[in-house]
Image (tube, rainbow, N blue to C red):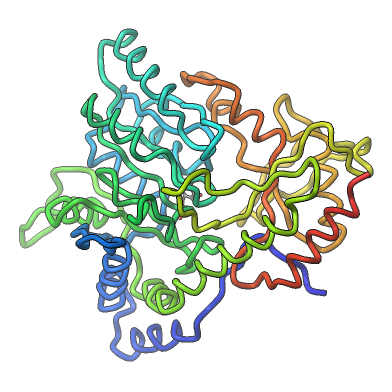
Length: 419
Ligand SMILES: *Cc1c(COP(=O)(O)O)cnc(C)c1O
């Protein structure tokens, strides 16, 4: 059997038609009809609401989700010396752009229900930062981890009360809803990613959901080197080369023809895992924690009780790993130790190895940013939740390539691995 991957891009077949059109009409540049068309498709998708009038948000396509975070921070006025509150339990692209700007990330731990930003800790952090620095943090970045919406109503209420803009990191949450409204449309800005392993792909790319046309134009201006209107290149601000290419946008337009099917399939795979694992003691699937939540289940995730014994767990972490998780593109530095002071439990690593031997890709959850050596000096407001989830959690394959038979095979292998 071919290897079952965590989440692999799936083409509709229409992508090549849009790309061919770009070549035929000589739009092989970072603008053009595919970019405009893709933005239009995305606007239609994120603005629709269940039983309510559609929203009127604008979308700007960019070269990456990371670029979208970066430009949203700039638009919120973040600069050197500022602080930004960001969910600690996330992929590094939520927080790295804060440091690009010379600002400081202040990490906020998670709550147990959605695994995302804890509203109580958020408010505690806001008060404490004001007391300690005399200034308000400039923005709040909650994340929809693995697609699961965060406690949007509570976080937005706090943000409104303290008048701090919210940048929603919906990079993993494209197609997720909260009370029938698309993730990424609740805050001032919403980040989307179309990297190769996300809900839809443009091979690499991202977008920023903006509140109105003026804000969208400002983002577009920064994304195209911030030029003034003179007959020559005149610059009064620092800009970036972050626009999406018309070729990549062609892939995106093709993907939008099957996005609803893809999302439905992710949810179907999740439901099957939930059904097949419900009687397995010591393993718990991460499910929608309430009726308001409607995750896209970008990846299906589970936690292992620390007392669950997995065959071979006494051999976990005996070898230094070469390479990196996630089939990371580019290079990784060679690890000099087999262990760090914060890592998944031995039973989780043993299950990962057992699944790997059965040709199934799995992966630990994101390692909290406040435990990353590079952020050792950043302030953090913690409650132990993300560290415990990191110690006990695992990501299982999801997405359009994963069939019902695959899920049954994966669950069988999980059961076989239990001692
Ligand atoms: C993927 C991801 C991003 C960034 O997206 P890229 O398109 O890869 O730059 C940002 N935040 C989170 C939580 C992500 O998973």
